[in-house]
Length: 441
Image 1: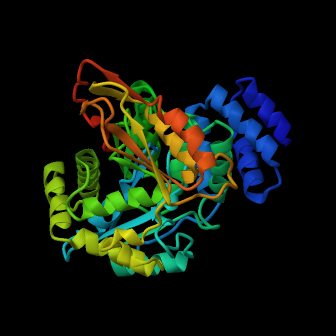
Image 2: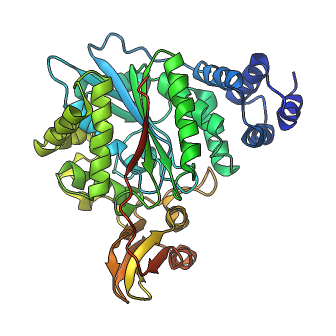
C-alpha cells in the first residue's frame, strides 16, 4: 500500500478498508508515514467523514496501537470522565478527587485519568496540572498504578505504551485545523479511554460558541457516536451535552484555573463550575454503582467537598505525583503573571454575550496555549472574567482582568478581547448548563 493512494481514496469520498486504516495507523505509530501525508489524510477525513465501519476500525486500530491497561486486580470499579474541550473547562481537577474520595468498604472507586493537552482555543488538563510546581504527568505505567492504589486516582498524559498513534495524530490535528471532525474526535477519545482499563465513562460533550461543536445537533451526533462506540466495546457510557456559549467559571489560563478548582474543593468557586462538577461526579457514581441515582450522587459529591475529603485527596494526588501539595492550602504558590491589564465596559446595560472561542484564542495569544505543537506554555497568564452573561454593567466597569508577562503578546490579545463582550438592553435568559443526556448504555 501507499499512503498517497489512501489519501486520494478518502479525498474522493471512498470508504477505506480495515487494512488501509491499519496501514495509516501503523505508519503513524512507527513514523514510516511522514507528517505531511498524515496531515493530508486527516484533512480528507475531516472533509469526507467516515462510515460506522471505518470509525470502528479506526478506533480499534488506534486502541491496539499500544498497550491496553488491566486493573482487574484492583478491588473496585474504574470510572473516568472525558470532555470534548472548551474555554475554562477545568472540571477534571475537581471531579477526579471528588469521586476517588468517595470510596468506602462497600464500593471502592478508582479514577485512572489519562488526559491530553490543549487543542486550539481550548485548554488541556495536562497543561493545567503542569502549572502546579513539580507535578509530574509523565509517570510510567508502574508509577501510575502505585498512585492509583494509594489514593484512588492518577492524572497522567499518554505514555509511550498507550495509544501511541493517537498521540501523534492528536498533535497534528491541533495544528492542521482538523480538531472538529466527529470521527477523529470519537476515535481519539475512545482509543485513549478504553486503553485505561475502565468499566464506565462519563462524557461531557460541549456545544456552543466556545466548543468545537458549535451546533447542538452536531454535539448530539458526536455524543451518540461516542456512546455507541463505547457500548459496543462493553463499557457503561453516558454523555451530557453541556453549554459552552461562555467560559466555564470565571478564570481562563492554566494556573488560574487550578486556583479556581481549589476554590471549588474548598466549598466555594463559581456556581456554574461547581454545579457541572457535581453533575458529572453524580453520573460517575451512578455508572460505578456507588449510588443508585443521580440525586444521591450529587449529595455524595457535596458531602465529599463539604467534609474536606475531596480537597485532601487532591492534595495527596499532587504529593504522590511529585508536585507542591502546599498549593491546595496556599494557591499563591502557583505561577502568577507579572502584569495585569483590564477590559472596560464602553456603556451601561447588560452583558448579553461573550464571544467564548475568542476569549480562548486571546488566552492562547498571551502564551496560555499553543499555536504550533512545539510552542511552550506560560502557566501564569490568562484572564479573569469580572462579569458573566446576564450581569448588569455600568460604563467603565471592568469586564475582565488580563494577566500577562509580555507586552508583545498583550497588544493583539487586548485587541481581540475588546471585541469579545457585547452589551445590550435586555438581560440574557438563563440557559440550562446541561442541555441533554444521551445514554447511559
